[in-house]
Length: 424
Length: 212
Image (tube, rainbow over all chains, first blue to last red; front, side, top):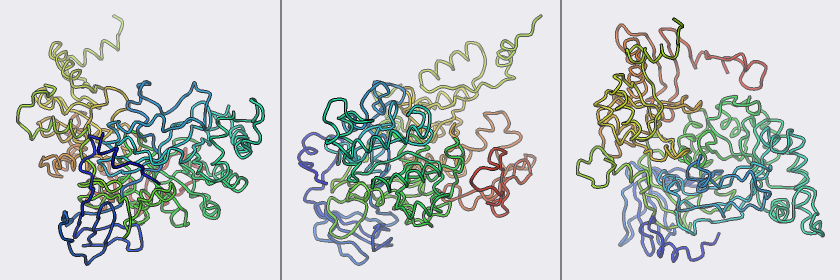
């Protein structure tokens, strides 16, 4: 993933990103370090980041001369959190249509809708999210008139104008009862549309000789879907019911596509088939209610059962706002631990697992790592009472300020000085 | 005379027999409604959602009006734009009756964690609130707001035995309720497999036995 002129652009225009760590050596000492790699979780460990690169990491490291030192006693150092399916930066106020680019119910386009065209890195919600330790996210809109919602992006949460790392990262398609409703009323109709679209896209451009060609997709959408239809990009499929998951496994075999299923509430029922098919899943670790007939088999220990079956899964809080409250991700991962999942797997499922899927080199802390992304927390990052005290994204120290924190500081009852522009 | 249930209810509000639980987000609207309550001589017991309550904590305290607030929900509509993660502790620190709120079927399962995170954020912002004090945000204060604090909301001789036995400090993400007692009856027991199971779940996939 190239970050062309990242430093130049952020230095020139960004007011929200503080103190680029250019030509700085950072020494974090005596912390609990979660590497997500061979070294595992280390107590009283230290690391050195020089110009964004991890040059040393381990338990017996001396302070390099001239280094800025952070005492990590009682603190935890981890890779940043990666939220694997969100609508961050696409909507400011859910109910205000003019601020909401998450769906386009009156549009005729589908896969060719490029989410990045609607992404606003300057949304204060990005800052509200970043200060909670989420450094990266996969982002896409919500399907409305078509089972496809468009082409999703991967971005960092720096809030800088070049924070989109991959504007053509994946495609999202809706199945299950919601996909059935969009497709006209039934699961067979949704599957028929999906197969026809994949056939169109896999045969693109050869099939498109005349302007009306293609069974399901017009030219522009077939063109947009063709990399995913050929297995070169992931397709994220929204589905929960166990029988839908089995249909998706068949589809994956038939087309050789790279599938990630989002939702997968009933995955535990078909865990063996999922493991055998190498199907990747994004699940909500607290989804335990039969909110619909798609999720009637939901259970609170889904994550633990999938882990036991050796399934590759990430965690995402679909039960909360995926635009405004992505920051509960660590809390929900902690709840997976409370319900049987081991800590290391839970943390990897909100960091290195999705980072690896989406080709972002930020999920691990290892010697030689460049463009280092890390978070220092004031305690166990899966505890609700913990929070970041330092955030670095791609080698740059990030601001710990946000719109919510400016409001907090303006109204903080411990501050008794007169504030001229306070509300009252 | 024909009975008018609507007027009868409003008369109950004016006489103080019926507590007013009011849905309201913005600081200016809450203050306006407190003025209306003064004008007509009735009492607003609690503002719910109360996104901007932290801006008027002193006025809520003066009026003896509670605020029921989320730990971190915001932004779904314009009037919900200005919340902060310290809303509950800031209202509490200004001397008003604060409580945690959730109208989510997920959030309500872990109100202890909602309290824990907003409590931690408040103390990080410079407040010094103890866990015991913060625990009132999901026990005694909502009991007061509902007018049942003589019966429940604290562990005291003479009150109903509404008790939870936690596996560890409930301010931890890892804590789970091991036993729940309601009015002295054991309603949930993890070890023994006792928990409610609805008619709806019968015959569907998923844990069927109460011990699962």
